[in-house]
Length: 341
Image 1 (cartoon, rainbow, N blue to C red):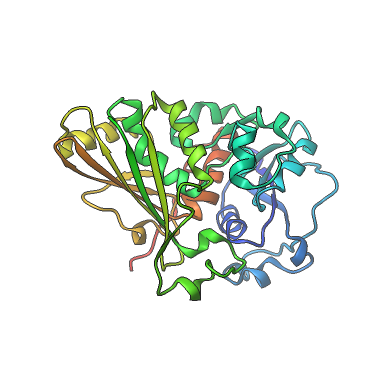
Image 2: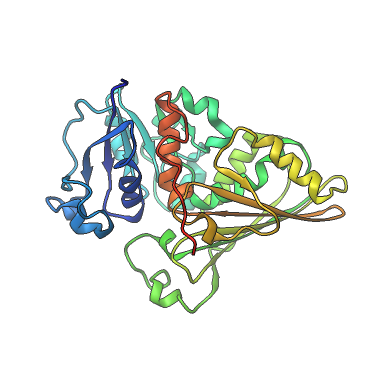
């Protein structure tokens, strides 16, 4: 029997850390060795995350000085903190960063969009971008993974087959909407759920930090020359991302032809499901699936994608990448079933 992957989690008190724990506690090939949360150090995990009460005896700890007998760490920390940890990791420890610290190869783009200096660009060159469905083979051989942003995941999965097939002509407009958990566990004036539960509004027009990440990966996927217009909105729900991607194809495409392009591209991707008409975020909540639907009229096409921002958009995709890095089937521990209703 293969030895279990010994895992450490930096930043376990937030929503991303909570989802990592929910998945990894039941992963057949992983053993959680430690979970950090400086403000919660010493407290039982089940006391902080009540949904995990009775499922683990682990307590949160402060960040360890040394990493011994650890195979892999997940960095579920606020932007700017992983860059302090990564350069100090032992060479035999693999790492998956769920923050934005190492997604962008251009330092000036990072500093413009994340509003802080980058202190570890030398380490950035070792990172592989962790969108599993477009970068599977590189992830298998990687030691360091930059896990994609949630909006980037939903958008890229909706665009990658069209870019790879050189199907697009002209401007692409992405209308993306997210639930309140995407803003993290700490409430702020415009992100606190009571503020947004009966509201709807756009935010960060033309300045969202996932835009350069999306364009960077589209250039990797294929011949990306289109203009991207990307707009984000706040949904009055707790979980889920829904994107409507409006584009023009080079030739007229029937919906069946559009579907076939996606079916061919994702034929080895268990977690991408093609649906009739529009997907629904209720179908993907708490799962690692991305549901994709289509509409077409002549050369006008619309692609719809829906994910759970905390699972496929964060923790689930991180575990999917860990599976590949350690030679496991990428679905291991991730066949999570949603609820109905």
